[in-house]
Length: 225
Length: 302
Ligand SMILES: Nc1ncnc2c1ncn2[C@@H]1O[C@H](COP(=O)(O)OP(=O)(O)OP(=O)(O)O)[C@@H](O)[C@H]1O
Ligand SMILES: [Mg+2]
Image 1 (tube, helix red, strand yellow):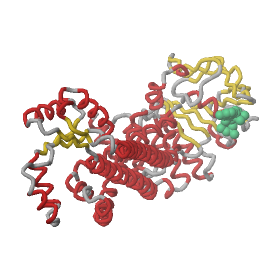
Image 2: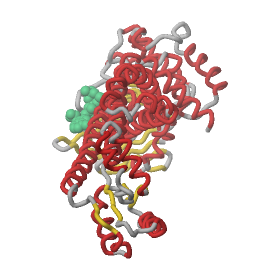
Image 3: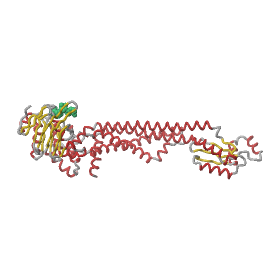
Image 4: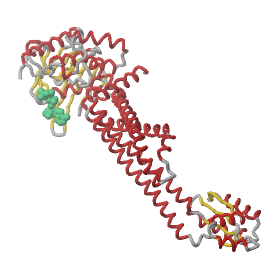
């Protein structure tokens, strides 16, 4: 379970989050919506400890992650994987190596890597693109590669910050279907998006943000701004 | 542990290969650096040889009076040697002095004839003293003039040469200091240039570094391949440097030898090949690894 407790995030001249309280249960599928600048990315970055709250606590299964030491962050980030709008693949590694990297980082054996990576790449539909570099993939393929990398360590939580922002409708739905499938297999998914159609079709919990505050939080919610 | 070290080196080698252009540029700069350092080594050796040659030319001669016996002179000689500031004492007996004199003037029959008309050998016995450092001559002379031997000393040719000796002494120490300053300045500049190049290479990877962190890589797992890459830069750069250095030196060495016949730089480097290669690759690898270590620190902070 994730708990945001009275979180504020204040940048030098801007209040990005103001007194946010939020609970997300494990295995939930949550979408976060809100206008540009509402604070969605900031909220998600607190979970991966890319940013620290100015006030309040972020708890993951009762561990206060905002006060973790930097040497404990790698293992946290293997439990919480992220997917980004700009994919963030390692440009000088092949598809296979990008996915394998997540396993190498976790100290997995070579045997396990050569067994797991093809399975996961097949799951995301990239079995014919093992040995090419990110710039040789289409946008949709890149995003699927980055999902494969996020999946391969079987994280408890996947954070997807506008994962479809750079994709055409067809690829968008591929990615969303993948996320739903991953969620059905037991992973918590937190999705931030601007896409009305996705939110309305998913019919899951929707958290609406505005100017750093949570203004609406509904099960089976709809995209309302 | 072993597996992850292997992994780190493999990743480093792959990065090195895939960033081919950047690696080549970085190595080229490091080769220039190492060539500068090699040239500084030549400079330092030639300076040393030149200084030694010069120092060997400076000596003083002590002439003894007629009644000084060989025993007493050898006593003085061993006292001098015990001073610790004397490099070498050469005894020249009356007979030696005479035969040297004859040798030197063998074309001057008039002089030789008048010499042979004397019943006695008119030349004094003497010792020739070389100091470890020319600045020591003053001490040696004052030791001789105040010690037990002073009565049997006829003359020391120090005071005539004193200004000359002082001038040479000053020249030698200036040369040394200048050489040292040149070496420090140029190797610092060369090091900084190389360091900056490695820094740029790592800077271009800052995006990758932040991604690796997000994927959950520990700092050592990120740092490792960069250090391995820096190691490879240094190693390859030193091999290239040595491959350039030797042919160039063999070409240049006749010119250097013309100035300093005793230096024989090329042979010196040939005989000490492994030592030289060891030093150059230690410097190269040191620069590569240490620069990477310093340059990556900034990007690993959260
Ligand atoms: N590093 C930063 N320094 C200063 N201000 C920042 C920083 N990051 C974000 N902000 C500000 O915080 C506010 C919230 O930004 P955030 O990225 O969370 O918005 P968002 O809801 O994700 O928007 P979008 O939908 O455009 O991605 C914005 O006003 C932004 O300018
Ligand atoms: Mg955002």
